[in-house]
Image (tube, rainbow, N blue to C red; front, side, top):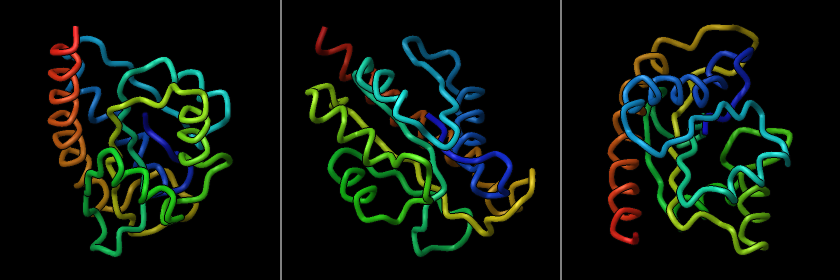
Length: 155
């Protein structure tokens, strides 16, 4: 799930990374690719319908622009609750909490966070963030392969 506003430079890192991931992982079975835009409560059902979720988003990591960091499970939960993510209509925390309350929180979850260089009106990613797209896609593919292997073991 790619989160972000594609009209605001590096805020588009989430959807752009999800597109790069789709190009790299389109051969994996059982994956749904979703451009979540700036999020809404309507995504709660989609999240609840899946056993695993990988979220791509621009996030303040206190690192160099273009840095990619993968946070899984509780580490993801703690990070999104810290308020370090970009502000959207509905936060990832809100959506995960809705799934948690209904007992439908995906047991496997990861955040692929990309440090933005700039957030402002514009259709292009900064050079550092654009260069990070393949890195984010490869990291997500590794996570997806692990998630799919665990799901295969459960069946």
